[in-house]
Image: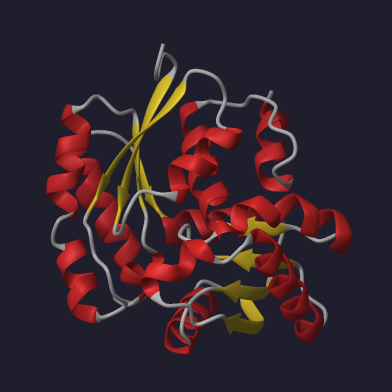
Amino acid sequence: MFGARKRIGYISPSVLELVPFDFYRFAPQGVGLVGVTCNIDNWTQEHFDRALGQVKEAAAYLGARGVDYIVHGGGPLVVARGKGYEDLIINDIATVAKVPATTGVRSGIAALRRVGAHRIAIASPYPEWHNAALSAYLTAHGFEIVHAEGKDLPFKDMQNLPPTDIHAFAGSVLDRAGRCDALYLPCPQWQAAQVVDAIERERALPVVCYTHANFFAAFHTLGINDVIRGHGRLLASLSEAR
């Protein structure tokens, strides 16, 4: 039965496309995804503000649908508001939905700390201005960003970049970064989750992608510690709590 164990709500700024695809590749049996979208279609501040204005309504709706946890996707929206905004949005969601919550930024930070990373390389689909904002945000939270590079993909084309191209791009970023503790692959709208395990095996380095980090946070909070193999170190570490 769908969601027989737990139901995880997801608020997406844009179309729900790759998130469900990736989620059901690694989610334990009986854990379901319940998503809503704010339907933005550009990188502009106007679109970011519009999506953030819908968060409380979306959270209340998901709470009424009986979810056990809510993830707010959309790192650029939160990062653009500066350090500490993740606390405000999590509090708003938890207050109206009456369930625990996280944001992509909060779960990414927690995941990087989980794998013991301090010196971070970032490979993203983002434009340069957002890479700079994300780097500053992570720096404000105590990380050292050794290199950050984006593909500057059009907003509605991110999902079309093949995993093989992401794999090659991530490898080139690591080559230019030099010594680092982990690679961070932000954004759920490109197919980065599919290359995490391969890069870790090739580079002997932790790789944290946005989607894995979000659902690791949900699974961990909800006590879901099933064995998950083939999707990288972060998700594999869930079973260590057994």
